[in-house]
Image (tube, rainbow, N blue to C red; front, side, top):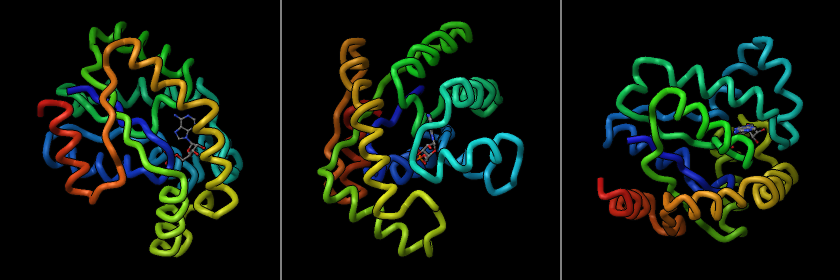
Length: 189
Ligand code: AMP
């Protein structure tokens, strides 16, 4: 199964992806995790991306498209994957469509997870507290910025994928297990 988890920061994409990895036996591809690991390891990509990620902006489509294309070619993705945090712009979605077509693959579904803004802000604040501020972009100021970026650049993907008949929407305000169950119902998986 090839799946996209779509939704604003703090909605639970990463949490749900990790559970679905266990339940469906396919890997999670998180562009945010890949970028954070590159930043921590001070690779050329990490050095280039750090300031952008820390202030809550998006790194270039070219960079993330390359990351995803390479990752999808790994053998563990042959049975499917869960994209978490990609695509985040219409050009990224177009690039994903082209790369999948080129690889002879197609998407099965796009699951949009929703929650109200206050909940998102307080979940990210909680994550910052629990992780001792491990993520430089989990501050109150940067989370507002990331939400603005989401509304402006990523939310248009909802109608993009609805138009392709792939969109399923799940309420992310419920407890974690209920959200997982709703996602699996929506997928028929
Ligand atoms: P995330 O862990 O998905 O919240 O991503 C953290 C940060 O990594 C984002 O705020 C962006 O700076 C960067 N990032 C992750 N995925 C993408 C993407 N698909 N396009 C551009 N930037 C991304």
